[in-house]
Image (cartoon, rainbow, N blue to C red):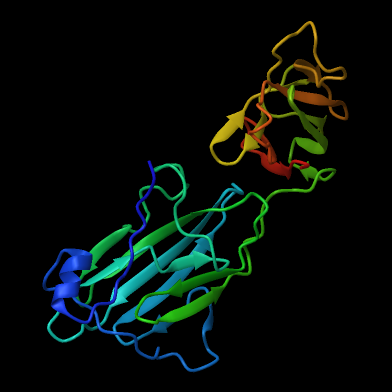
Length: 292
């Protein structure tokens, strides 16, 4: 289900307000000069921009542990209204990250802030605020550097984002957890499917281990083609598979490692895998950028 992104329209007459909003008593004044001083259009997250009719804030941001989503918690409050109007239409539409990416772009409920998102649109009176999270669908390797707000009143401001690098790792790097180290060194994709060369080493036995060993399997591994496609390891034809596969299941002591190709056969070549994901039952997570 696509989210309908709604505009905050400027109208100079009640007739135009009816055409755009459906509310005859709702109108907005024409463009005006923002209250921010010239050269002061770049704010830090947590700061508020004050305009003639609005106060606009980015309260905090969150990239979370998933590289496909970025969230900005915003608050837009109506402080005054043009003469003769009773409310103002506020929406997601003025917002962008990195100057181009709009809020939304994925299935409802898919983002980590679902249930706490700001309304996509609404009519607001003096003293009322549109507030909550704006969820953005971003590319796995996208580093978010800027949140922009630019409405049709001419109000424009940016917030600098300094802590939203992609959590995806480069191939060849190692994720170190309490009990394991995990590495993805190579990936390949062809008409036959996708595979990743991975290595898991035991640093310390997890609680509940028996016989001085712990079990390593295919289960923590996934291949992702964007936010909509998560593939589990799979071999279509056991009699004709890639050589050097990662063991499907085995028990290992401290200091021992399992390694080999993690197979994701049957991934259609048009679904370009862009990430390898490790998520185990202990809550450990790591992501690697697949080779193009």
